Image (cartoon, rainbow, N blue to C red):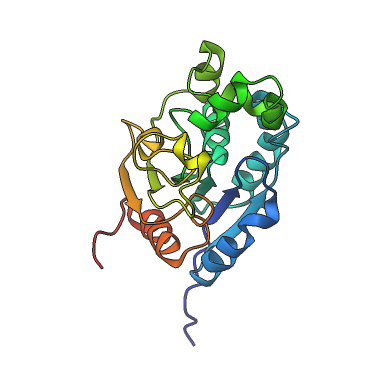
Length: 225
């Protein structure tokens, strides 16, 4: 009796939350990816209390373990500041099985809101140790930590703030209310798409989740309705 070949191992998707977030905040995205046949793993980190380099020190052993556990591709999906963490991690130690990377509303060019908070001494503590990575005028040291983009990246931006309030007005041009569409762009990205979503909805909305799955499978976003 001929048995069917075993199913290939599920590809791992590392999920990274944004600033002031926690691992549980990307669990709904993890559920959607699990239903699509992926193995999601949420990695939490202290975005407020640790600088970018120390965040990498904490996460790299876990990333290396995940890489060692499977021969299937290891993808990364990161929301907001999580995309900067992903860039720094991949620059330090790229997984041998690295697949595709998706960034959701990541301030690759920095955040004007972070600039505003950093300029005011009473507000500066809100950013904690994340300030050097989030401001638009980054130091050469932070740029060196982020490294070059020489792996397949897809970027999803939003252009619909929930409320066009004072915070959103600090961000120039189309934005998701916290990060401008222009700031999300990377010249080296394999693809970039703008969805009518706010910053906080990017990991949760079905349209964004559909685009994430499409990029993980195909290396580009879907332009069909």
